[in-house]
Image (cartoon, rainbow, N blue to C red; front, side, top):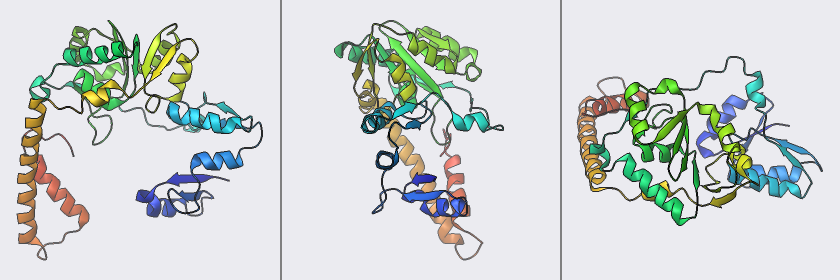
Length: 299
């Protein structure tokens, strides 16, 4: 048996793409459809083995599965990427250039933000902080990228101590200016995948991390030899409080967007019924007005 769980955004697409594949569509949130966790609890055989790639399941989910399946004395195998082993033409990871977000947009330097996060580490009695949430890393270091469409983030991991920072990233994304900038913040650069060996080498420390965001493999590698403080990433609450500069820039962005939308509405009223248009072409026209605004990057 094989099943694909997805939510209401994808029911139509998934039904079409799974037709005749032998994979059953499990419509999340619909009456009578079990969650993945419930399905596994009901169908896992006694002393069975659940396999998943621990790098793509967050630790909170992984530990929840572990607890549920322990009633059946089932075990977890999380150190194999079975799909990766047979995916011969798999595209390389995105490695778009990293750029520095100027303080004229943030109103706060990365050094100040790192100091605030380290203060929160101290309040929680933590000597080490492991970060894998890309938005939190981008906020903390005032860097941006384009590795994920429509999200200005950089594929990376960050491990902070009281005095050091270790950024795990594809070096090809960094030019000399960005490297010097990060060095000035006391950040050492490491290969992207080296985070796993580095994390496994941390012993006898109190580590702050958010299990709902850090993957299962990293969490398992630091359990046992360290004390884990599982709390929300300090950056999440710190970045929610906008600086006056950020607030002013948000207002400017809305004004620019308002101009683009107003021009679009005028164009639509003048042209509807006169030229061919559909949802896609109209959306592209609206985006073309946005692109004309100064400072435009992407949707």
